[in-house]
Length: 316
Image (cartoon, rainbow, N blue to C red; front, side, top):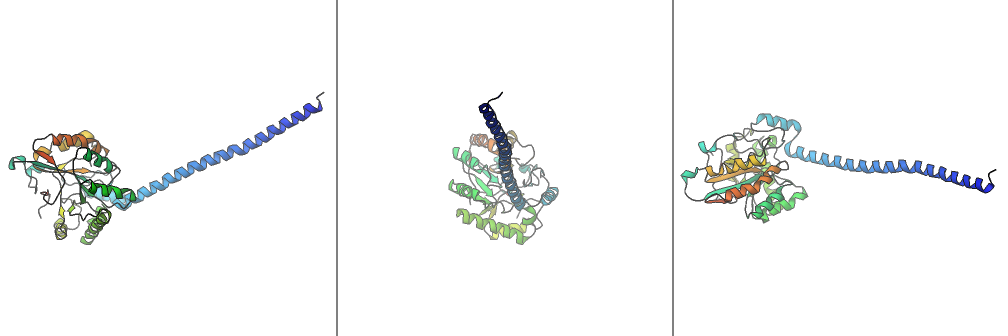
C-alpha cells in the first residue's frame, strides 16, 4: 500500500505538472503574439516607408500613367527607369553638326577643357561622388532638382562648400508639368532657384533643360523658354559627350568608354552624367574616368563658370 506521504508527494507533483502545463499553454501563445506584433510593427514601418517613397516619386515624376505616357512621347527613354532623362538624338554624332561651343580639336590650339556635369541629384550617391572628386582634387557641376527632404540639406551645402558649381535642372522634374505652359515653366524654375538660395545662399545662374534643349516634349517653343532664361540672366548648358548611363544595360565599362573615347573629339567637352539612386555604375566608373582624362595631353577638368563656352543643341 502507498503511504500517505508518498500519496501527498504524487499529488504535489501532479499539481506542479498541471500548473506548468497551464503556464506553458498561456506563455507560448503570448510569446507568439509578441513575436507577431513585433514583426507586424516592422512590416508596417516598411510599408509606410514604401508608401512615403512612392509618394515622393509620384510627386517628382507624376503618376505611373504620366510616366508611361511621357515615355511614349519622347525618344531615347527607357520606361523601365521612371524619371530617366529622355534625350532626343543621343546617338547623334555631335562632331558632324553645328553645336554651339563644341569645336573640334583641330580648330583650336591649346588646352582642352572638360566639364563633368551631374544631373538629377542630390541622391544617395552624391556624397560618394563628392568624395571621389575631392580625392582627385577635381571640381564639377551639379544640375540639381528640388528635394526639400532634410537628409539632403547638407548635401546641397556640401556641393557648394567643396567648390563645385551649383546648377539648376528643374524643381519637380515632371516633364508634363514643366513644359505644359510658360507659366508652369517659370513657376518651376523660380521655385528651384529660390529653394537653392534659401538652402545654400547661392543664386544659381546655370541651367540644364530636363531632356536637353533639343527635347520634343515641351508644348512651349524652346526658344521662348531660352528667352526667359536670358531675361533672368541664366545660361543653359547641354552636352556634347554623354556617359549613356541613363540607358538600359549601362555598365561601368560602357560609361567609361562613352566618355573617354569621345572627349578627345572636342576642345570644350561638356560631359553628361547622372547622380541618381539607380546609377551606381556611374560612381564606380568615375575614378577611372578622371584618371584617363587627367592623363590626356593639355587637358584639364574644370567646373562651369561665367567664362565657360556653353554647348547648346539649339540655335537661339
